[in-house]
Length: 236
Image 1: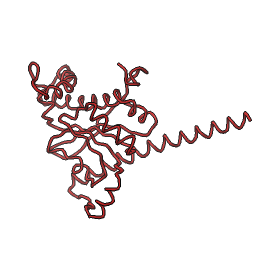
Image 2 (image 1 turned 60 degrees about the horizontal axis):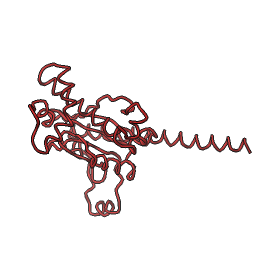
Image 3 (image 1 turned 90 degrees about the horizontal axis):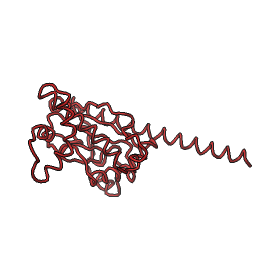
Image 4 (image 1 turned 90 degrees about the vertical axis):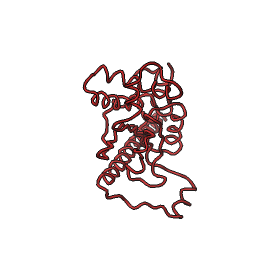
């Protein structure tokens, strides 16, 4: 009986390990699919999109996006275009400065947990106006824009401390802001935290170049999580 319990336990562990590995593979495959699409966008060799009536009717029954994209509302940064994807393929959350709040996090959780998207990319972009405005801000900003500035301020402060030319400081702030968004998503979502640790969700960061069209990945800690168990469970 004891040997049977041990065998059953090993069987469960083996299944779980395989599940985690599969989840990781799906995240990598999804990332490759996005980056391949970006290459097509840059080259101008775009794929043929299925925009037919049949496709719309199929998607009306349900969606299964392979990636979640959190990016800026900037009119020049359209994820479906720059990743060369069609209807129903990516789940997009857009807000100025690619910052997040509880509503955005809830949207990410929905796509990751209920739609089972295996990849989340937080995408900043060259010459981000929201980041530039935060760097230039003096005093307390008025209105609701202040909420955006507040989110970006830590990245702006770090960039100024690092120093450099005006363009270099902006570039640093853009990257730091993307990293901060990645950290905040995991920090404030128990659901995302566990999906990442179970290998069901891969998180990456990137920056889109307005001039070249390229998306370049930004290195993140692996995984981009907080260290303490208290923080890991969304407590402060």
